[in-house]
Image 1 (tube, rainbow, N blue to C red):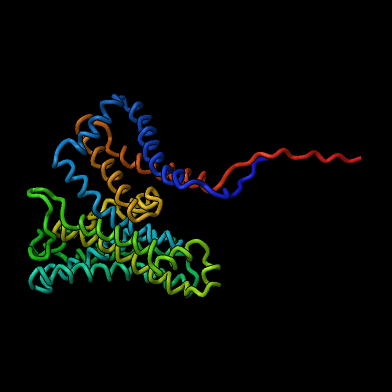
Image 2 (image 1 turned 60 degrees about the vertical axis):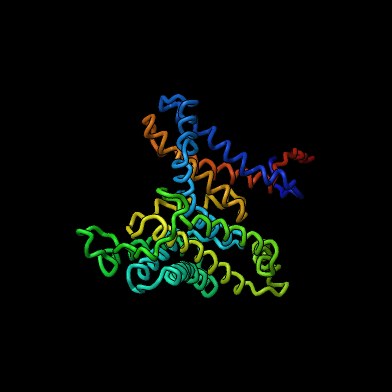
Length: 358
């Protein structure tokens, strides 16, 4: 008879090694479809690595791709630590992007020193609003936040398309559904000359460090971890559970909204319906791969971004489908979930005693 039992304890080294092993395993397993595609596995991975680290431009592109993943990864990590399952980062990202466009395209024609903080703040507020609504439905009516945040993604995307065909549409865009361009003073500065990597990366790195300190060293972080470990024990200990969850929801939504802001005012300069190729959903993988650690999110985002950029290079050089990157990301999530199960539970085999009757 097989029984699943809780592990009494597992070493910190074992838990730390799970994401690393998961990432390596996902790359190894990705060799199977590569072999079926008829590609030389060694050459394919060499081209993949060269496409990420072969030049300054390649590294800058990887960092550019990692920037929104850091924000959405942090959004998921903070929420999941409190067992608040925010699946709506994709929609919150677009809310932040729409807020950036509403302010940055000419509503306030002021100096960038004042305009940039206003755009960022307004974008964070709109992203937070996108998570506060599901949180209110959860605390007031007991609605499942997984369902409400996921449904809101589709509602926000439809609303976005309506706005891009209406109030936000660029009158000089030749009919294309896109917004007017952001004012020059409303754009984030680039970090390298003639490269796309921008100051949003620095903001993401700083926020990751601040969140790591807050979660581990502050009263707010203690309440967050307590609610995540056992909500009933936290309530019995006098912690305001609903108030703590509301704070987590605001923080998580604001971080997701900041991802949209950084993409608009740091990279694109305008808003379209295809701004995000799934950054909100990929952020969940980043958070899980990081073990819900804010600092770990940086490493996980760099790994996922490297996979995507490297797969694009491999696709161009060898004719292999770039969907391999999606496969690696999916397998890394599966591996980290299996690893998390192994670290928390164990299988025990017991012999069932035969009952004899006289």
